[in-house]
Length: 480
Image 1: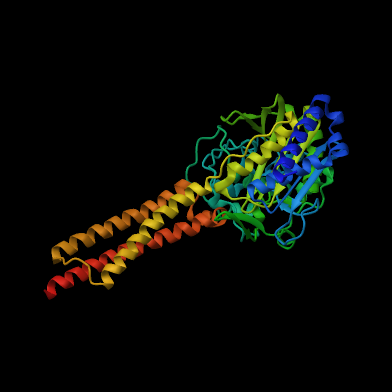
Image 2: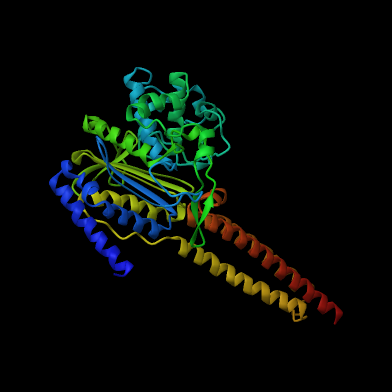
């Protein structure tokens, strides 16, 4: 049977099997592991292939432990991916931070209604409104923007409390009270944990979450991270390029926890039980996008089921966790490829894991924006290269037109102004198209970053050659 036909048949088996599981209830969800071990494997193989991830792994768990799991491909060092392979969890880390704060609140260390500046005095430099509370950080209602110039600093090894002391008010702060997703909230929340406990965030996280969950091999030490976490992969002109992922020690709370799929699965089983025991009824805020948010998790109805979920990414890694308390099931996924320009496509894999388990359905992954963005940049570059070749040819063969001093001066001025406007347009327009600054592009979309700088160089070279041709033309007019 052709490979394509086998894949279609396997996916039909996925739909039928998981649909039957959901229909029969959570007690029979273990049938996926017992009777159809190849079903989930085939799905994971297909998803990894579609997004170009060198490695991917998935676990389905209930409150007692693993129900089904599948892994495919290799890690950034060429070793086969299995249930012990470390992955970076990205913003999945936020839900563990929220759970840590809730545990500290039960223990009397933290008050959700306390002002952040009363717990972390140095936060006055970053918070415009001193009335922002710990709860505002948890729910992303502080007004802080999603400004990654203050996050993802791979050179940072100090605590979040120390890092906050060196930070200042970011651009674009809004009024407190409305949901506005920002990793800065959880960087500050990590500082709250450190100051409230007079200790490290890692110690509090281990005591409140990792030990109760049995996820004690989760990586919380930056030095251990650097030793243990293999390189991830970012998109690079249609392929996957290795990237040696760094760690922000002040960012464990918002994105730089790491660990195996087994660590993530054990946490998910523990958190699933917490949601079943009443956490799911705790306060949430409306995100304005058809979901609510609370305790580090988005909440919405999927396939008629209440689902709590969160995805996460750093350059080179993607992770996803979803909980369906009503069916006593949770899903965890990790892949070692991620680039911001293909974020929607990769995020759809996490969604498919959820719908596959909830109602037995999957959707086609959306197309990638990368070919469009790179195509536009390559087209502009091709035009400039053509003009450069023509200009060099004219200068070398003496075919430049004669020009008076006044005419040459006017044309040079037009070229300089036009080149300046074009450079500014490229410098502003490309980041707007991608949604990232040049510095961020280098990490999250390196192929676009390369094209960006090549295009700027081509604009400058074109302008230089146009100026040279005018000077040569003026020289010819004087000789005649």
